[in-house]
Image (cartoon, rainbow, N blue to C red; front, side, top):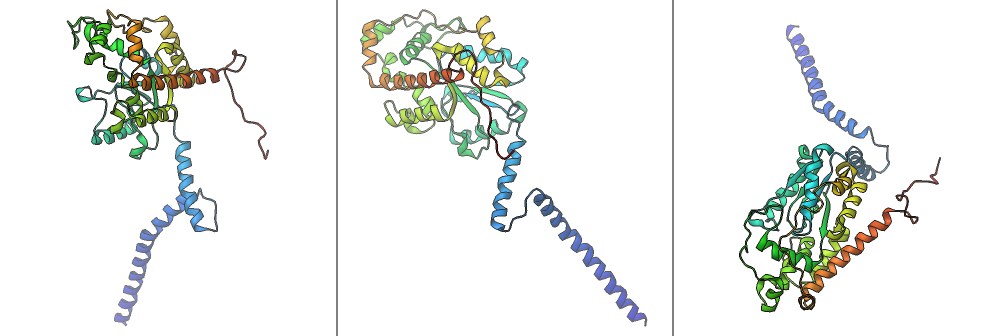
Length: 347
């Protein structure tokens, strides 16, 4: 009898243990699946259900994404296009507008990043939430963040300048500096040869190949982007300019560029136009002792293939910028264009 009772007791305890273990192991999984499926509508097709689950999860994530507070603007500024004036407005207003400004400093003033740094930079910008909203700026070529599994790409902006004006400005800047840091000795200090004389003597400092900069900055990190005269690079630069950039302005219309940014992205650029108009930051960096080239020099430069290609990119950017300005206002030029939804069915 005693032996029988012990067997019954052991059987009962084993059964209870199996029930407890089964609940602990399988019950948890059921709860997780249940939580995941609570938001899903019943479907007869399991394959369709799986697809909807992924899409719905993505939609929910997007719905919860705070576009204003997660805003990242990347200004890969082309040298000698007026970028210092624009960036210093950002530094002056960033505290008031509650966003961060970060300068991208690359070793040896390189304009391209190595492969490890491309990955690191893209991930860092995406995941550094403590710095958002943020304006990143630096002399770096366009980098396509979508190559690195980044779900939310930064908003690219930039400025372009007439290629010969930019080259002449840079030529004298290397010799005399500017009024921004007048005591800094520049690379070509002491060289007093004018740009006109340089062209006549066919010296390397005024070689049209030195104009090949705006195209590669918009083209990106591909090797051919940096080959002067590459038609592929020009085509890629134009494609990126219109498809990858939110706004590209021109140096000669800096105020309109600032105005468009303020109206489009007020979270970051609120008050920029007024500050640009009334502060001393509108023309912050002026090259010293700059002399305009002669008509003969201009004609010689305009014969070069490099100038023609760089100018084609500039004219293309100007066309897009003028188009964006026109679309800002309604035809009567008095009211900002608006849109609304109507004829919504069913009620």
